[in-house]
Image (tube, rainbow, N blue to C red; front, side, top):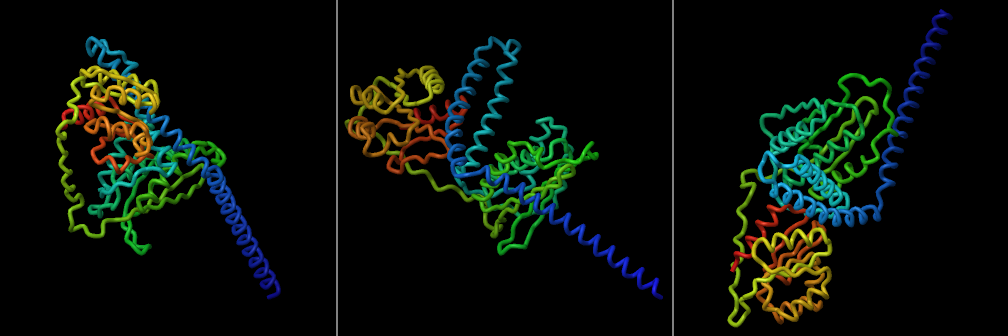
Length: 402
């Protein structure tokens, strides 16, 4: 009997010791995870967000100029067979510049929030196709349920956010190639949501256990951009990571509460444009005034405007534009301007337009971080980065308007 007591005591002690060891290991794992999360958080400050927005504005002009030059190279080829392969390859690089611009804007929290609803099945199908085109060697798994409610958020924003999440997962667990999507309704919050899970795992065990310190340094940009973008559209983002084995992201998105109503209500009719007042200039010269700070983009704008038959005057600051307009207001039909502040009521350029050229057509080359002035109701806008086709379509629309 005594031996049995000693056996029970020993077994109990061993169980307690094992439990303590597991608890200690779990505690260390949680502490390590907390340290990892804090390490990412400490790299993100207010200055970082402001720097990202500043970089995005510079990148928007650069991407527009590079894409335009690339199209000019393609158009200059005598035939398709003589088209420089490098020119077409440049378009792929431009697309990467555009994607980086979107990340920086989202990271800085400056994305415009636009209304809309989205079908999560269509979104993930499109994202899967895009990931396959990148030839990353991923094994994609996605078996959507037969019926899922629509998401109450702009589809383009959610698509970008999920792509950013995918990029973050690939940076967090380099070498893992099995990416699984799943989606279901969730009722853990006051408002029903859509729960989208993304799991990236190894198909075969890696040669050695992963280490969180090996996470790509660019992970923070992808992750924070996705988190900010989802937050602005009413969503949430969380992650769990087991280095060397798998990493999981969970996206919570609001769903449409009144599906019986049409998801895309008809847009209100645009206000009719007023014709020119009696006595206003007819702009016999058909000139175009370009105010753009980026020299490469100035050259692109001038080229396209000259091709449309306009005499072009380019300048890099508001003072020069004011001088041109003040001297010969009837010379100009169109003003293309990249600085919304120059259109504020107290500036000399704005006063000259209202007093000397009230019928002047104005196109603001804006970024995602700038809003057009409200006191110019007929102002046209073209958002950077833009391509040649977008530029030509906008010019045709503006110049054909009465």
